Image (cartoon, rainbow, N blue to C red; front, side):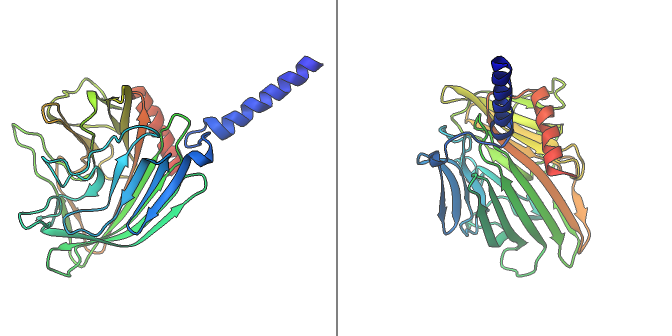
Length: 324
């Protein structure tokens, strides 16, 4: 009888552990280890004075809102902000390349982008469980002109760190064309160079070593300097601080041209580690005046290296949690 009672107690304890500790996005860390830091144009989750992630939205004609650092609790940043070779690479950020043939990606010699990205009405909600929701409105227009080409309503939901330190950053971006049609375009690939980048991007930390790329459609694609491939998810991982860690990106089934193509750079000589959800890689996309385009992605910093099987598992979880 006593043994049976002990078994019941143990089973109940394990059930509680499953519900409150082992579910993805749940944290067993003591609350006093994490704290929010909010300033006028930034918000971040910190653990013992070290940033887990920080979102910065300082007005700047040559920049866009970005996340940096993006790290695992207690670890070094997995992102690199404004590296010397591409100062417009803003760690983890979203930017279009060309809208109606105007460049919104990099700054020109005068220090501003020919296509300007403005943002306003930034709302940041932080939870006692260390989850967060960021909402903002963005307007895209040529520099020096008030004519709106495109508007955007952006929402980013960030889960609490899980027991292993991983967390999900769910991006939802709803774009609406202005009074004229909008063409979303990229730098086309050539016979000697694969290109096509635009959209959600990550410039990974130079400290990452022993780089590997995984994808749900991993069929032994060439992993070289620059390449592209279709997949529902991809993972950029390596070794940092003596441990393995990575960053995964997931494409939502509702996105146009699902599964997305991915544009990845692995160039150790600089080093140059870069990942982009390159759904425009093969061709431009036209949005009629007044119509909307919605893009949804999940970004997950995580420990260890994720292979195709793990990515498939996590992609199913993303679709289940995010809905259709």
